[in-house]
Length: 80
Image (cartoon, rainbow, N blue to C red; front, top):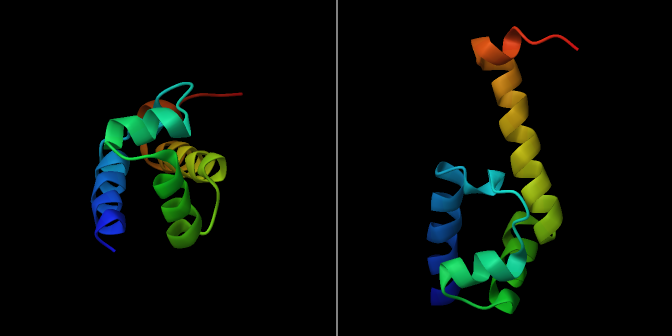
């Protein structure tokens, strides 16, 4: 499906540019940024990523901070 191929490219760029870190990001906002509707975007994330939008964002954010915790010298210097 051409719509899903387009969404795949846009989501890949979304992840590469780390736009998932944006505070308060919603499915309607992201769909508008992608020039699509929420139904297509939600369906794509559910079918391809195997999770809903909120879980997808949380997973991206957790993976990002976990990677930083292991590899960023500045973050490694933090203490609890």
